[in-house]
Image 1 (cartoon, helix red, strand yellow):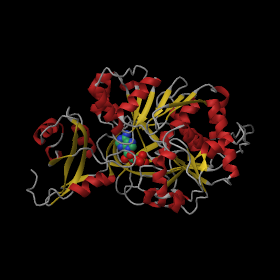
Image 2 (tube, helix red, strand yellow; image 1 turned 180 degrees about the horizontal axis):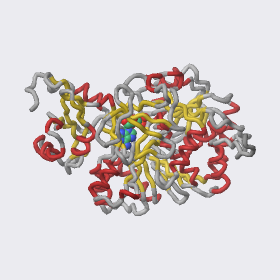
Image 3 (tube, helix red, strand yellow; image 1 turned 135 degrees about the horizontal axis):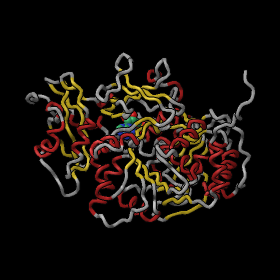
Image 4 (cartoon, helix red, strand yellow; image 1 turned 90 degrees about the horizontal axis):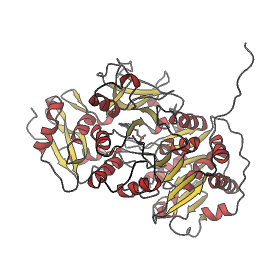
Length: 544
Ligand code: AMP
């Protein structure tokens, strides 16, 4: 046995906080309030306020492992809860404010939240479920839009009464830090517990040049909500890097975001494609209105970023998209679509196709795809199969033991995404397993069709779903939302995508919608489209 080793230094969120306090005390956290004004505080204030929050929570009886829930927009107090709660040994549980009150009640009850931190601006939503959460002992209200209601604790008053120092405990790096629930479009939402170690390693890898490349000089705008997979870890990776954070609060429309990006000279912004489709449409409509020269990367993930959008940002506005894939179960970053040096000499079309793929796995995340029997498939860029992943920030089980069938006996997590992998490791998602269209026994990729339709100049959004069919079992139908003042006929849409796919892939019908229905995290909600239009092809002549 060799003697002599490195220290067993725990990887905890406390270290990120310590760095912010020690090395970047003047760095800023900017938060946009409901009245649209901007609030600025420094990392020194942030660090002191984390101690104050921990002191207050301790007096309220919060102990190790207790769940403290947040029902908040992205802002400085939410950031403080992201740090103070795990650093004191408790677990911060982010509630998704776009869920129905009955879902929020189910989630808060199942998590047994003991304290709820709620924005005053979300009080009506809280009232619809919060009083029924039997485990909740206290409600703390962030006074973002008026004073805390009677019977609740005012966040700012609580902090004002406390000290700037807290005796942070020494934690085990495998202690739970954060609890996030999956969006649960099928079945009940399931909880995923992030550990200190998974959060810190994920933040470190997010700072690598060849992943999201966060750095100290960055000004980071997490448009992705802090209730969606820890805002993709940005509140941790940005603080780790010592970057400035710009929090958008409740104002997530394209014009408000563009105003904020220009005013604060944002360098990196991150969100789901539906947000960026709106931003691209606004920029196309008024190309000279905003100066976005500071922006060096727009991280897009959560659902597939259409190639036409990536290309449109680059060619019309000089803006660079970084396409990434991840899941609540993966903390969430799994793959990033950067073009490898060895492929940089490819044609512009091939490079765009690489950037519009889901990319290759970040360090410590391993990927494979398997057939229905669980056997690994060839990495030939053609063969479809279910993606499985493993790594230090991939869930090994769900909170409370739900969904055990998603974990294989040999240590992989079954993602439910249907993908191809190519010889360079690039992954292409063709569908969620539950959204797969199988027509006459043949698979049709809804994602590929959507991306092609969204390259039509009049199309703002397109979602392709399976409609029942007497002869072929299922046929694709496209729901299309047009840009303001624009339209196209089904024949024009068909002509636009015709040459790119086998004939039997082309949608049988087009449904015009004002907006594609969305999930609580802003993804296209195809179950709703299937519910509403799934029978529209029945009793119609068979497709060619
Ligand atoms: P959630 O846990 O709500 O973030 O959902 C995770 C799922 O979102 C993944 O399993 C994918 O189906 C989908 N997803 C995430 N990122 C991408 C992406 N870049 N392209 C396509 N689908 C994505």
